Amino acid sequence: MKKPIAIACDHAALDMKAEVIKHLSDNGFECIDYGTYTKDSCNYPDYAEKVCTAVYEGKHDLGILICGTGIGMSMAANKCKGIRAALCSDTFSARFTRLHNDANILCMGARTIGAGLACDIADIFVNTPFEGGRHKTRVDMITALEEKLSK
Ligand code: RB5
Image (cartoon, rainbow, N blue to C red; front, side, top):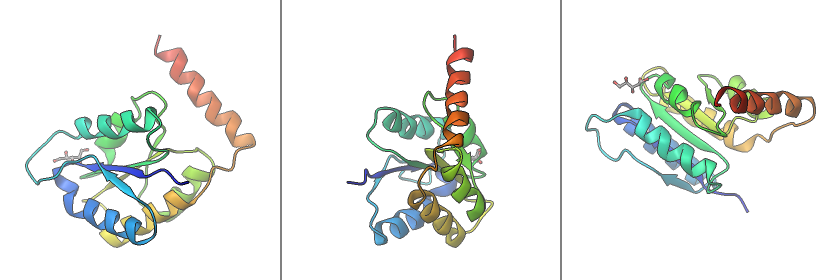
């Protein structure tokens, strides 16, 4: 049974988030929307925290965070334990960050790419499995770095 996808955005990405949710829902993925729900100015780390906490707690395997550039969301998400966030603006990166990095959070920029591409990127991200093998060794090294540098 597939777990629902966690998704959130800031005020810059409300419309794109709605398009991504519709696209994923139309393609059989339940999305849980952690906000923001209006175009009122807000702070993207609050929404990165909501999604990353839910992924860390095991409520979701994968999450999507969208802000103006995707950069702030990816910076905030990558500070969270157990999170491997990838900022993607192309489908190749989305495919390979799942295959090779086992990324569990996809970040995108609503001011840098269009909604059609964002939907394609999200589609590939949620449908591509981790390849494991030699890539698991490297992902385990990322986890070890997280442990080592958070002491
Ligand atoms: C909001 O204006 C903007 O700074 C935010 O959406 C994002 O691009 C930050 O990285």
